[in-house]
Amino acid sequence: MAIKEAVRPGGRSARVQEAVHHAVRELQTTKSREELSVPQIANKAGVTPSTIYRRWGNLAELLADVSLERLRPDDEPPQTGSLAGDLQAWGEQYLDEMTSLPGQCMLSDIMASAERERRERCYLYSETIMACLRERAVKRGEATPSVEDLMDGVIAPMTYRLLYDLDTATPARLSRWIAQTLPSADAPD
Amino acid sequence: MAIKEAVRPGGRSARVQEAVHHAVRELQTTKSREELSVPQIANKAGVTPSTIYRRWGNLAELLADVSLERLRPDDEPPQTGSLAGDLQAWGEQYLDEMTSLPGQCMLSDIMASAERERRERCYLYSETIMACLRERAVKRGEATPSVEDLMDGVIAPMTYRLLYDLDTATPARLSRWIAQTLPSADAPD
DNA sequence: CACCTAACGCAAAATATTTGCTTTATTAGC
DNA sequence: GCTAATAAAGCAAATATTTTGCGTTAGGTG
Image 1 (cartoon, chains in turn cyan, blue, orange, red):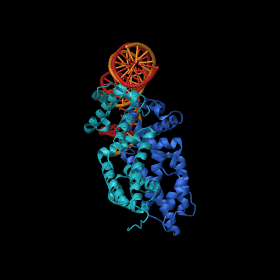
Image 2: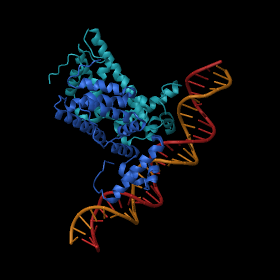
Image 3: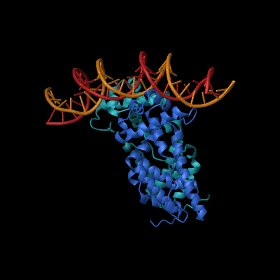
Image 4: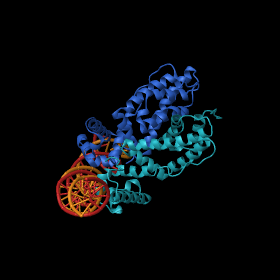
């Protein structure tokens, strides 16, 4: 019922976890959220339902767990030579990913989870990326806002729009948020 | 399965809706989310479970519906004489409400709903309040940012923190967001 | 190698959800 | 007002899901 990544991660546990996660991802390509069920996933994964219930608690937590896994920063964000450029580049691909149907489902699944810790991991994920981009800028000698300010000025409005008002989660808006957040930001308006 | 506020709102429907909503609110004071169930609510409301399933679809949607109802702006936000003051005053009471346990459950229930429309209503709710506070400021002749900018500068970071990083959803932060959003904002830091 | 035990499988029991059909009560037309 | 039409509720049987107790398997440990 908690987020278990440990205790006894040896062979079998890991195998079951992978089988179940894989089954979910597989089924998600075919069926909508409404059509997914624990017994169905268990069957596809070659496991008993009780295994899933005991480990994840319920369908919502399992889906959130699977979604969160995708959030791992696989590759370094693209470099553009300036903080504004880096933010725009990373942000655009992130927006693109999250406004897509699978991206929206992913957000939905994570938000539906009762585990606060999961959402905090999303926070940390974004924070890590902001820190990375900022670090680059600092190394180049650019004047940069704090990571906190980047979170408030860029990540927060972007995420807010992704969750509450999808139509306004656009690259154009992103430029505005970036311009208003960076030091020399006398918005051209 | 959709958000039905119409079609046949006469006596009985309204009565059932009220009975069910009331039963939910009642039960929520005693039991945790995990302990709530549709049959239980139906029983308390004096209705059959199938009535609830047919009207709301499932527990998550029902809870979201009940939560959303609480979000109606009951009373005019307090007046303080300045936009910054109004934002701070309203924001503080909002933060207070949403960081409380019932407030967090409310947010949770709304976010768990599959109905995008529900989240959009949250957006409209905040937007209405921002428009109201801004209108006051305009009438006083204050220089004010657009409603959009208030949403991005104040509502977005506040909501973001409430959802993802509760510890940083504080009045002190709120002041910062307000200061950085309002025109004459040369943050004292 | 042998013991300990977390995690899984299995199957029965308990709950929750769906569904077909009937009944009730609101709405609309007369 | 009275009646026909029908949305929404009730009821109960049929399904499906979730929980639980207990036996089994297989990592981890000394």
